[in-house]
Length: 376
Image (tube, rainbow, N blue to C red):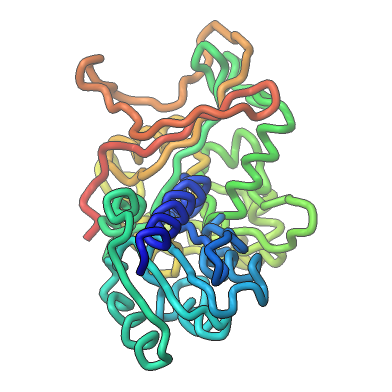
């Protein structure tokens, strides 16, 4: 490699890192990955990043962007291309080989033992040059949370709520529709499109009778809808139950639930599963989240009320937070985002890597929750 080509690759890797960061909060527990394709003369001909959970990987997006211009060129990617079939997507190595690139430069090796090192063997067999470590210091943080979550037996869970500027999620009469405007609600549907399940408590079903579906234009599939309902009081007429044959619904209740109510719910197509009781007699959170993971839920959105949200935050089952703040002041005795004991100010959890963006006239504050329970 000449000094000039080394500089070109380093600049391409820096751009790939920037691309990867665009997907922060939309792909976890997957790693943040960006990719740039260089033509034989060093010009950039393709760019891509892993944009959302379940979507195409960065290499595939960048190679698609480059098309035939990738042939004979160099793929610069922040993470070793995967050589195994993941939860949602096929391996990337075959697509890289089919593209005709002659060289692959990765910033870091994949921490997943299921694929780590396999790309090197595949590229060597095909005569494609492969090297790792360019820009490693910048690439390593992109996979840090992915590495820590590997082997977890609970989903990566995002706690989402909408509140007024004075921290109320409803007025004193319990009315919460609508604190935020339509653009913010559109963003919620975009987030729902990146998860395997939406989780609420029975109180949310009773108060709002939500559908909990993803209603983006052109999208027909919605994530699994999950209701934690200790005593199985969810009415069969609730929309989340009544539409179970169109969109899957799972009700998690405590052991020895009402058999008649269970039959009514199951007749409408919803599934009911009984779980052990935890402290206070409610469904044990550890059992609920592990059951979701066992069923293939690896990324979940918690859209619950203050009781369940508070319990999940304190127990450490939340990994990420998305808070929509509306420019309205409600006042009075309306509920706050979560019930129960808090923390002294100096010891209060502070969101990690926070990001604030506009959602119409509302604001969206996102960050990683700093206090997580052991995952295995």
